[in-house]
Image (cartoon, rainbow, N blue to C red; front, side):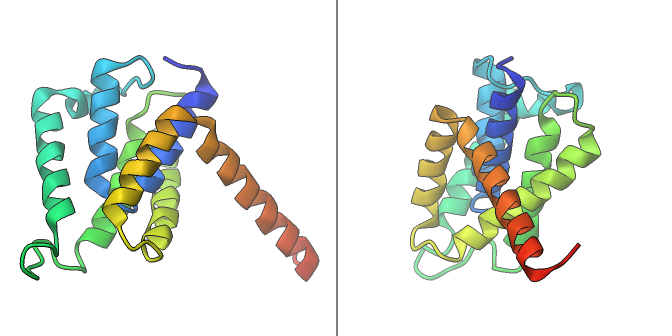
Length: 165
């Protein structure tokens, strides 16, 4: 497995991407777990890297990408994908094998996917954004970790300016 910081960066980045397209993130985790040393999965999540798991998330990624583009017909609706994308973000981080307890990793994944959902509201082409961000996370795995630390620093600075404890 890659060093811990790289794994956390990839995990946080993919969890954030799950907020845009949940199946993209789980497909990436499955492919990375199967074909690279960047990701090692917990034993209970090895199915993500199986042929069936990769095939399932590939099909879901195609359906999710086509949603709303087939003659105005929405395959998934709008109420269902939001919560499912948050859960996908939680599962993305929980699947990684590292010292972080699975429940804490799941909760951190929910937060990262929530940030991705906020980004999705500002994007004109969510599919392109999810694809570009996936490539960026894999090329620069420390980028999401640095972004998360910067956000934490800005939040602490804003609290200090507001006089909050």
